[in-house]
Image (tube, rainbow, N blue to C red; front, side, top):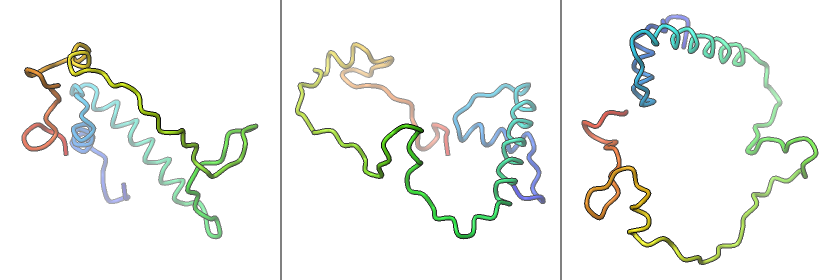
Length: 111
């Protein structure tokens, strides 16, 4: 956030809604403080001089790992899949022969 924007509880509530978090009103102050600290840290990072530093498209390998910028791709192997009935046995919600999922567009909330 820029200096002229204030991180208020309404902004935190909006971010929580976008993230599909159901925060109680007493949690907003705590999250407001935590988010403010994160934003302060990001602001400090933006002050770094990165002139001459090439952007990375992959993180560096962990210590002791082989350095490689090539993604490991396993062979595609055809395997039998679950039958619909088997799959639906593990589903938390069903609508007839279909898997029920939360609405993400329209009046179902979200962005």
